[in-house]
Image: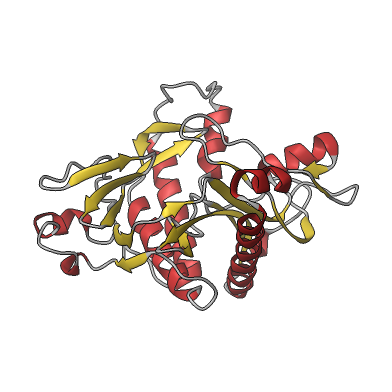
Amino acid sequence: MKMPQALVQTNLEGLELFNRGKVRDIYVLDSRLLIVTTDRISCFDVILRAAIPWKGQVLTHLTEFWLEYLADVVPNHLITTDVDGMGPEVGPHRDLLRGRTMLVRRAEVVPVECVVRGYLSGSGWRSYSENGTVCGVELPPELKESDKLPEPIFTPTTKAEAGHDLPLSMAQVEQMVGAELAGRIRELSLAVYGKAARYAAGRGVIISDTKFEWGHCDGTLTLVDEVLTPDSSRFWPADTYRPGGPQFSYDKQYVRDWLDESGWDHVPPSPELPDEVVRQTSQKYLEACRRLTGSTPDG
């Protein structure tokens, strides 16, 4: 199937732009927010010059799936993904927005990235290699890269507006948001990861690690933003899993690896991604979606 043209940016006439993030364009719709997931991709905190066809639809499809699947564990902010039911202001843009848009309740976001790790990879592996801990969590000695941890761990980070997120200890999180809320977001993040990881294992996918965002909607602690996507998670096929080194994955690690091999110093502007890297990345996102949900936006 021929890949569609990627959507890099939206400018929706008649709607007020609230924020343009690395991937999402967010608009105000009365007391609610309209989250439009573009096909932009960021690595090392830099928005790349290339975009990935189908990416926005995959992230939206997966997030909608997970929010419904996890609704018995935690409430979420999603109202609808049906653009035909989002109101007259959205109507003129429905063809552009279909499949990549969520109408959500506004939330007061907790300023912590809630990372849960079930396996030792990425920055967690680098930290463990240096001092045997990840975000202050002591781990058993002699673990290998990509090893499964004895139990999932909560390794929060800052939620930086610009630059890199920085690791936080639980004590630091408690200082930022209070001990009660810190304990609650830790408990819920681990519970959500646990249920999702068990489901994914039954579909032949390992969720190595992921990050969640929480906010308060009308005073209730609520799961917000994207959930368990290839942008926010490491997905490994179980049938190729071999601890002791990096793993084949269905996420943007493939792009990170290509960028590092290119010699790029992570300072803008990024190099242009070859067409084959764009195509392979698109296929990885679609495969993650197919394995986890049984369907894909491309049909």
